[in-house]
Image (cartoon, rainbow, N blue to C red; front, top):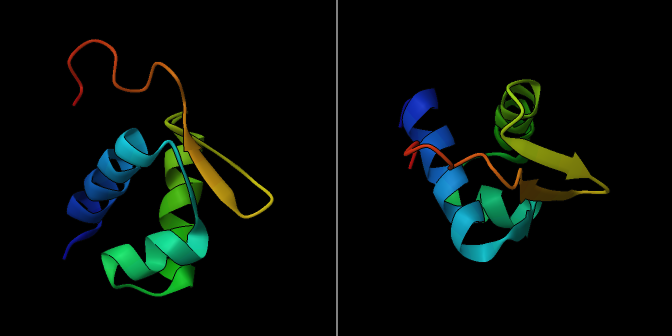
Length: 68
């Protein structure tokens, strides 16, 4: 699975679940926790997710404007 596809799946999982841990995302997407951390870092830089204390949440308006 390429990075863009994986990040889109990560965003959709967060849209459904609201909050997930790095470990949960790693298991759900079948990739290492380091891969998830890299993806989350990139998504956080693009203001799409929040990350603190091992939990990842979707920025409230990340899907506004038809981005889903």
